[in-house]
Image (tube, rainbow, N blue to C red):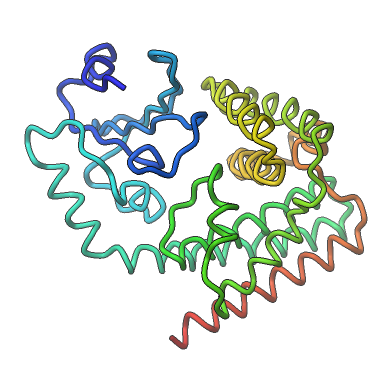
Length: 294
């Protein structure tokens, strides 16, 4: 990848820039995009750009960022351009509090998961059509928390492989709850094809940033390599991110359930949803207790 050429083509030569994500190391798939972060303080949504037969996700960021989740995206960032050395200084500060950031991120994810569990229960009792969507989100937040507690980045494409390979301990024992409540054993080529179509449709509605091209590319890679569970997990994670993005608008967008039923591959059994929500919440509380006493 000719990053210098890309930076010039986008008119970004005046700002500190770094490469993040799996492309900074050896653990990437051919389908993976390049996460390029430009520190220009611009309040612009990320954009996916096709460049030299590859896809680049361009993020805009700030050197005064304080959001834990965003700061962890810069963990292991590879500097591409930094004439002022401001980015190097910024990354040094992140490195110094790396352990604290991962701990804080895990706690935030656990709290979000518990919130989603309660939303699931409330939705079941009130007959809200989005009950099962909240349950899926609770499972993915639990996955985020466990990933953070293992000081690993939350990459949707690689997370399930990471979860499988974490060492066995009292926290990682809850990984089985994640996989069980997400439902990865349901993955079949036919189901995944339907999930893809709805996931792409949902992404185009909510993000409108060409993410659908990347989703298709990763789907093709997973299917061609018989990675059905990985694909199921990945599609669900993308839907979780977009669902949370519109969580405050759901009362005005009930029509989206027709898309999300397939995109999330959701469960309609109310009793099972309540049981899963309770199971996830118990796992979250157990992990919070373990981490607070360590």
